Amino acid sequence: MKKILLSIVFVFVFAYIGQAQSRYIYTQYFVNPVLINPGATGYNGGQNLLLNYRNTWASFPGSPKTFSFSYDGMVADKVGLGAFVMSDTYGSLQTTKGQLSYSYNLKGKDYDFGLGFTTEYSKYSLTGGGFGSDGNDPKIIERRDGDKFFEVAVGAHGILQDKFMISAVFPGLVRSKINADENEAKEEKQFNYIFGLGYIYKIPEYEMGIYPSVYVKKLRYINTLIDANLLLTFYDGMLSGGATYGFGDDKRLGFIIGAKLNKLSFNYSYDFSFKGFQGYNNGSHEFTIGYYFKR
Image (cartoon, rainbow, N blue to C red; front, side, top):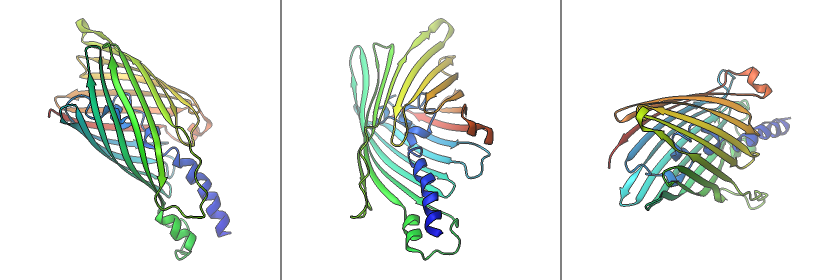
């Protein structure tokens, strides 16, 4: 009976591991691209601190809750460095991630691009007392210790002719299980990607900007997702608001508002799904607080 219970639990656990990839979780990536793209590391030329919290499927018992903290900035001429840590809990599944990012900036008359890559460490483990008092079972001990992975991702982010935003990310380009067992079946290799294309339209006389964008995502264990985003900024970016419509494997509608005050920025977004599970939760909430200072 215990083996059957473990099998059932891990069907749901590993179904979520794909979702636990940070590049899937975040919905504010088109406002803060460094959340998903190493090419955006230090892109704005200064130093950036970001604190992010996301509550997915709010009000549902054991729903995913994600805390993230990142730093990125230019540390030398054209060279950017960044660090990122994340903790995600979903029921008894605990995901911990740490990454270092590196970027190089290419700038010319008609283009401004950042090229970057990350080295990432991820751990997936079970926590809590969901299996009763039988803590000496070897299988349970193994699962509580968790699976550990090392990954490398590459990305590019930039602007062409001051009008077009182009973004490309290839997560898990190199992926290796650190604590792999010799008899364990090897994970099937997958090609993961995120492509983004946007347009920049500014109205100087009204201190207003209009930024439509489309992102296509194909990530591990997740079918193709497409997000259509629209961001509006006012008073030279001091206020902002926008919407996202997601279709493909994840049909959803989201809204975002933001504000900047001197070196501080704040963004809040809410999204809800068009799938049946939406009837059992209050949607998803995401908050980001940023602090920017020059080099």
